[in-house]
Image 1: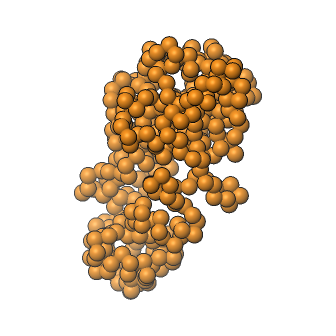
Image 2 (image 1 turned 180 degrees about the vertical axis):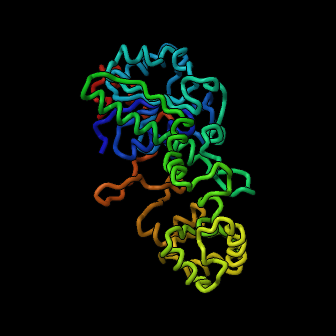
Image 3 (image 1 turned 45 degrees about the vertical axis):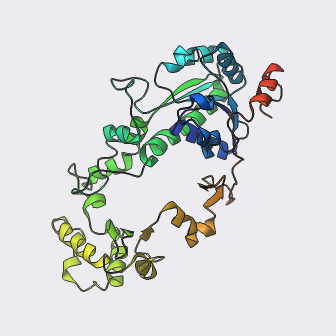
Length: 369
């Protein structure tokens, strides 16, 4: 779908490489400029072949040298976009900041991936996924009132609020550049993206469905939208929000005539009803609950590990996961015309250096072919 798009990635860690991988999964041509293994932040043999580089070409260059800088400058001459995830000011100090690169290629879309953003009091501070979503407010409603707030590692911040927002920004910038001839700088900050992801949840406040205090709203306080422990220590999730789904849940649990559960939206009794559900769900194993509830309109699913998910009949039927390079991976998403796409091969670090350098030496001929 994106085979006409050419991207140079200045490799780092986390959301930048994921963004470039996602675009490569969708067909974009990506040249990943990596550090030598001896200077890599991940270093060592494990860093020699990263699944995050699937579908890309990999070259090694030292950006602190004139040769490395010149390599990047030549690469962006014919590129649509560049991705970098350094702290603010690092690329400028390397002589590869937006002003230099857009002067050389006015149509370039310069994608900047950070946690705190290019400006603001926190811009130059170190941080990680959990810090960014803490400051943005996105972590606040994760868990019930009595639990420590937590969220799935990397998903809400690095990927959701970071990589995917950068991908959208790059594509929007490229479309604009192709119609106007003018490139742009995309400032993709995880604090911005994860805050923007809250908009659907925040819209509930206007209808009275979101309270400032944790544990007082449907998603973090009700009994019908929650996760429960089973007899075997595994978990299941419920999302029986709509009245017809809630009625079916009560029927499945043989509670349809129990007056304790008659008023679904009586928030004053949510704690009592949730405690009762906890006592019910702990009486059966996860497999037993799946046998009773899975596939029904109760809005139910087991909580699975990635390995378990890869073996679930629904995920197998849809061919969501596959194994390559000794690692469980997910196929590209979304799908087009119902087709499952197998992503490109994963190169070892620097595997394409010689070929890319030869193409640059020849004036760029064949560089992106």
